[in-house]
Structures are given as C-alpha cells and as structure tokens.
Amino acid sequence: MIRRATNDDIPEIHEIEVKNFSLPWSEESFRDSLMFDDTLFFVDEEEGKIAGFAVLRLFPDEAELYNIAVAEEYRRRGIADSLLSALTDECDGRGTERILLEVRQSNAPARALYKKHGFTVLGVRARYYDEPKEDAVIMEREKQKQ
Image (cartoon, rainbow, N blue to C red; front, side, top):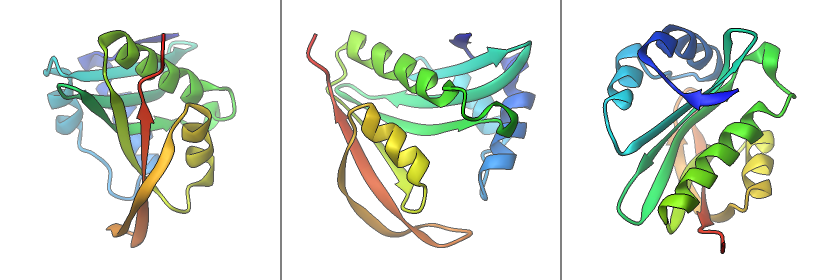
C-alpha cells in the first residue's frame, strides 16, 4: 500500500537506505524532508513493514527525484514501479512541467524503470558519484498530457 511517510517510518526507511546506497542519507535528513510542504515522501507498506520509499522535491515548475529504494526482500514485486507512478501522478496533478533525476550509469534496472515511466536521457555528469566514483546519467520526464 502506497502512503505518505511518517516520522514512525524513518528507522525502517533508513535501514533500507543504508543497505542500498554507499553514501546513505541520515535519519535526520529523512526527518527534515518530512517537514517541508514542497517534498513528496511516499512509502510502500507490505505486511506491516516498509518495503520501499521515494522522496521527491517540488519546485515551482519542476521537481527532482532525490531517492527511491526497495528493501532487498521485496524486490521484483513492482514496488519501485508503484512508488514512481504515485510520484509522477502527483506531479502531473499539480501541473509540474518536468521531473529531473540523476542515476548511476551502471544502474541498468533503475534506468529501465525510469524509461518505462517516460524519462529520457538529458546528459551525463562525469564522476558525480563517490564510493565508487561513477558518472551520473541525468534524466528528465516532461509532464504527461491529460
């Protein structure tokens, strides 16, 4: 079930974050994100546990997807797809003109997911990521026509 994240979800979200990223956000960063009206922060709850989460920041005409991750035991169940659909639907409903993101060049599954949701490649940021050092692919999704 997709729903808005709450402070009570942060420990589980952080656990997923630590297992998915070499330079994870802190629990405090996630808590800060919950406080801002311009942030969409969704979780997918399965069997009483947080299976995945997504964080997106809204700006006047565009948004930036900051983070999306799924716990290993819940992968390949369409959770990331559902989370991304919830975010893009919300953005479309708010009139957001485009959504931007960066993704590791080697992360083929994520890039395929983004492409499925209408994201296209804008360019590459050389050596953007650390641990390990890697290029970021910049992707964009323009507002879908209603």
